[in-house]
Length: 493
Image (cartoon, rainbow, N blue to C red; front, side):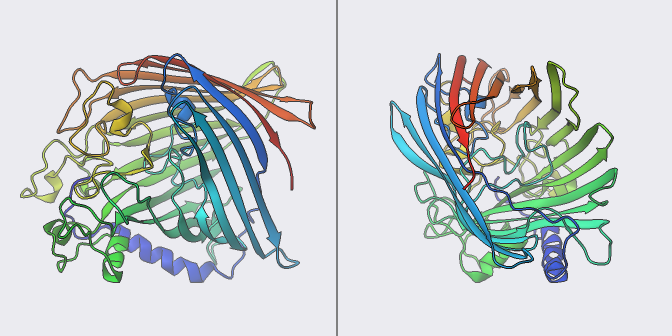
């Protein structure tokens, strides 16, 4: 995203609404009490293939723990525990640690995709650390991942306060509920361009309809900001705006005329991005059907609907019942992502706001290392870092991504085989146009596919055997066939 020049956005109004909701609901019990659940496991897994690069769907949306290089091996473990502090189970405390030790021919490392402590009150939670979260309205299981926050990178360490699922608003008898959080954190200091970069994130979603209603309507937004760090691009003395007043400007999406840099005094403070989402859910006797749309924003184009063609569209069908057949499909997801509009190819700031385009998703004039964390795209993995495609396609200046104008058709399937084997497939076909400033020749296409099988073995008290086969065929990545094979033991503390 290049410097945005819209003074105010609807984010400010929505944020105020979220703050008003907190005192209204803090002392009211939701009609849908979210039970505490923990995951404890030990796993060993290996990866191999015909190329030195791990295939796309073996590493994408894995919270950044699968090495990009192949062959590789990994040992993983997770411990989580929640303790109840009172007889009514209103107050609880807990925490979790997940670690992954990876080995490749190039290097070995240990990653912590989760390490956090939590305090919970009814359906509210305050936590600090790294914790996996799903943001926005979409299928969180076998979809391609949400636009702004896909689970493709390690979770960013932060302090967060918010709800755990949807909480009913008072006096609505469960017909109106909301789900949201407010958080702040820090990026890594080993970034290529920026340092001391701060992170702000919030979301707010409303639901019309009870949890038991046959039809439910969803709507809301998520908002992410990179701000307050140091950068040698478009700054004065390498310092991006910092301090309490500029933190407030970053939170509400506002420029500040007292900032010395023209970038910050005419555009919003920090690098802003996110999506405004809607969804419609139907409950039938045999299935749950969710239809959703994510509308993208970075430079304010969405306010004028100039980039309305861009977005993530999806339908998810989950079958509730199993009929004991040897082959069954239990979940179906079909999605289409389009980001090629970006409000048009003109970025002339002397024009009226509604004509400004070239949003340059996940790139920014100050935060040149962009919407990434430890060289992994935080948002959709189909907008990859330039390091992923540099084998063939030149880097777009020194920005984070060289390919943010894409269209992707994705099919996800999940089911059972012979009633004992669980299988999953992800099949994606993309057209890639590079960026407006550095377009790719001939719009290279790419197919990436994955098929996974998992079965439980009656040894050691029950362990899971999991194997995957993946392929990359096309012009964006090197042609590649790969596999993974692993054993996992789940247990209770």
